[in-house]
Length: 214
Image (tube, rainbow, N blue to C red):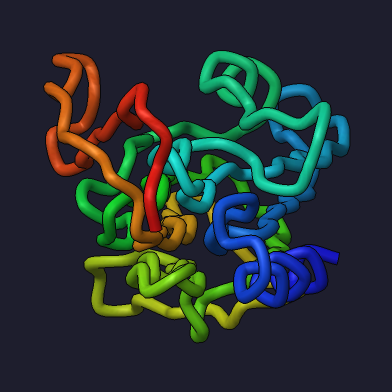
């Protein structure tokens, strides 16, 4: 479904480029299942992980947001750590990961988990090989990735889709969520000051009040 939506937007960009957006991060979900040695009960940890939204014709893409999905949000750290034998050791926006252009793509997310008990791990994702596509000349966003035990001798990189990988207690898995692509449409704009709460790598722009010109 996500690939179809991106294809429709890409086709429309040749007709109404001011009414579409560049590619976003698409979809990613992870599933961990096992039996808690603390409670003795089975559990299933299911998450939809956000990424970057594609740039629009008048503003940057949003960062850390689900794309083409509604009623979905990334699971809070407190819920995960209180309900499942999992610890979040890293959770951050990836600086400068959005595509470059007049309006930049939203930033991707890096989320790293420490598994406390043996479990089975599955992932369904996209845009690990082919990056989010830019619109009207905008640059592509950073691709996604998934690693088991990164920075260790036994590090293993998983493909975009994988089912039932055996995780052991103490294993770490790192989810790198794709960023989004940029828009380089030719609108008259002027730069504005970046908010102090924004990631400094992103450029922010505003439309002038006058009618835009092509």
